[in-house]
Length: 541
Image (cartoon, one colour):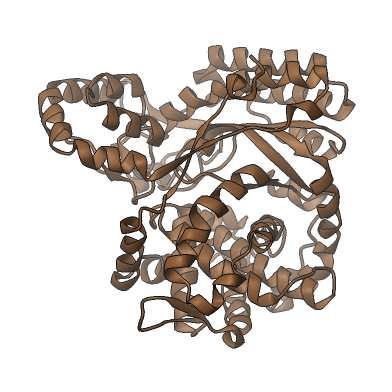
């Protein structure tokens, strides 16, 4: 609290300097906002029942509460920051980024007087060192659902999320229970009630199991502290977020069969059998949705277009996961970003291989592939997540990317999918260019750069004299197998030092690639999307 107060005073004392800086860079701020394409989140509400039409505004109201909770986790008191900014474009950019750091440019500060983003965000005291934390005799300190704070004597203690945010969470839980009372599907009703309980006590496993048992729901909501990307100090602390979703039942039915292939695909992974002894749960399923609301961590930075949950390793091994493809958001990114990027960076004779169906499949199998591989180290170092600490998320995202493409290869060979492997390979490489524009400051960005640099080293693609890239199809399979083997081995060994070395050497954007990415900016291709969303947009207010 003292640190937050000092920062507020500092921001207000620097208000004139900030004002001057913003006026000098107003055009730059406007350009940065305009680099994000606006997209309306809608769905065909004529397909909804009357009860579902009443439920959606309640679910959105619950989701909105995740915004200030995440803002506190990542920054602290955002209102004080906003009040210190008078330039509308700068304020809007700070709102988009949930703070003064540009999430799509390696968290670079864009407000004068604000230093680098703390690696531990606002989960830990900013003056706390890693050594102090590791030496502290503090029960539950690595838990997902608590803050680390100092008492008046300077001693560290844990503060559970549900205690810190008790008042706000009670309101959110109430909205979920109101929606549950309207739900006709027993599985959805049970899940909403259990999730309401969970956000009030930080015990999420029972609601996670209920979420996986839910099969016939037309609506869905993912809500609570879930991903740990924001904690770049240790990767321990989960951030609040929410998605409100409407199922596309026709597309979901088409996808349903793929989860059953997980055990077979696990056995065929290109790695020693020691690293694939775990049996992935196959009770989870694949579904396609229109997303109608993003909040919290999900709405910050690059927007997620697919979800694979829950993250609880025990739940994953027992029941599997659910993979949610956010079809409307995915189509927006493909049309507004992927196709224009291909026109600039993919060699002309391969551009016809960049296709939405391939983009959808690559994204879908990324989420499925989270269920493959290994969750616990083979040498008693505990879970992979605990052993690799702040690097765990980056390596896991890299694993899902490469094993997703491996799955596409395998399913095409088995005749379980249709299409030309060249479509999937070319779309995958174009997708890397789309994703690395977010920078290498978070788990996804680091994973993208490791893969890009690894593929370049293994000649899976080449840069031509005209500045475009050509995919070398004959080299792709060997590169995919080799990177899959490397990542799975590092995860199974829980080799923190080796992973840290990989991240340092390969998880960065080179000078030539940066020049090519700058060409995309010159072509005014959007970096990502931001949303017009809410009950009013849906016509349900």
